[in-house]
Image 1 (cartoon, rainbow, N blue to C red):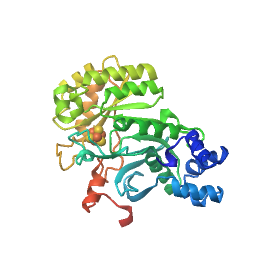
Image 2: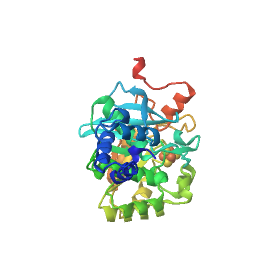
Image 3: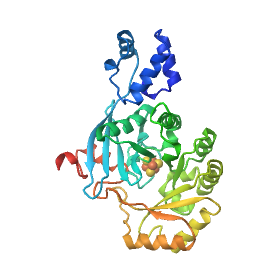
Length: 350
Ligand code: SF4
């Protein structure tokens, strides 16, 4: 495990191993998390310790490989290269309230959602907490900005990499490091109900978003295989428990597919599914991928479905299509890059 994926007390154990005093651990922690650097050989540590760390300890690095900038807004889609040459992607969005970054938690994903490019090759590996942190740090360094929100919605199912994700969020929250509020962190999950209960036990007031996408088990079974294990009722029950304990409203992401999940019946079913739950629906117009070429709804269709839900007194917003001129959906950039193609707008080529 990399030094940059360790809590301060764990770094204290490392320096103790080399016969150094405790305050050296704080120096290392500052170097990694305040200066956001990985070149420990250039730190102010004693030469002997630098050599020992360099020879015996790992510091995980992540590089920004490509940047795709939207010409319509300030959104950037990014490809990150990991040390083993695996590639993950992320998105940086500039909102009035600050920068939000979408983070990947796994290379690939084993959840098999039919509309998602990230899962087409299955799960390749989990990311470490350090690799997740470095996605944020590299972006902050490259653009000279402060990322104020993170959303775990890039490739991978965050709750399928539970321990490293929790460590990443705790390190991000650490007041000695980046000191980000848990309220500014969102975990987006396909609905691994058992892990939602575990999250309650962590007692971290993180925002929870559920990828729901349809309103009954028969159709969700065909879109998202996880539904066969944790059906809609089980997920909603876990969400109620999470919401009651965290006092947080739960977001439900609903990808709107023209003619498939936008009927009056869907609206009524959604009302039933969310009954009694402090919830908010985020409508996302489908971004078709090669393997799932269902129809993207028109703006009018999205507005009509929104009105249907509002008529049933549900809280609903339409997700702003930031960076809509860049190949957008999760996993598409990485897949295109690996194929040697590029359907995005690469800033280097402009
Ligand atoms: S939508 Fe999320 S959970 Fe489903 S396959 Fe894609 S990355 Fe995995």
